[in-house]
Image (cartoon, rainbow, N blue to C red; front, side, top):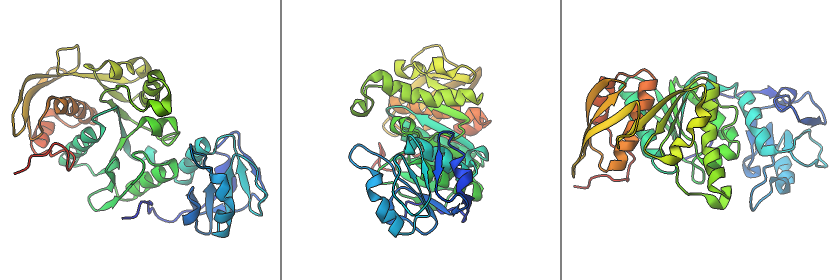
Length: 350
């Protein structure tokens, strides 16, 4: 399967794109237009803006000549290049890519509800539960995460290397979702994706934080930086006056609460901690799990074909997110009866 989004063809002036980055310097002819954005020189098409990204073991500036040979119309670079085509010179090409991609695709996150899920564990399962509930409630959904991209019921893409795609791809997927009538996009927001600007300029209305433990320190360096990267999603939702759902049983997740000022905060607990969403009477069986959930005084019985106490925690986050979108608790309970979770993860085998 292809991994590139396929929204309707579009065109934007180079000047308009460059103006999305305050520090940008446009060199060369400024009256050209751009019909696509790519950071892989091998798939450049005539009319594309080539973005020279720097990574831990590569430098996109080394592939500028190949990009030009393949038809690049302009460059986004951190270092000036002796080139016959225009170039946008910026301090950080990856950081600049996000606002440029947002402008190129006309900020699709403003046209649908984008829900972000972050945490060390449980993101994928919780995203599937949220997606399942919203679809059961009549929504048209999209998914972006570990298992790939899904747009509505019929369109899917693979992402072999990144749970959170680079911002040009991410904005393209969101635009394609809008074009296909998607009402809610459920996104796994990884710490790498957040720290590397892949989700910059995206408007998130709801965020869920499953838990935060000691992971990815090879990239972030310290636990504090790792947790801070995760908390930036909460901060972004708070700036929009959105809803943040936090696992009150996890100290790491609750470390994000100070960044939620301005948001409506819903805490979840299966262990008796103070929370707005509480699981009681938990029964874990070989074929599934049941519990009573209390959502701010409204009570329902939950019976789902998922096993393990961790899936109770995942379900509570999903319940909080679905509740925040306006789905009734009765509808949520009905949907969870048929929730199968992520294919291949903790599934029953006959």
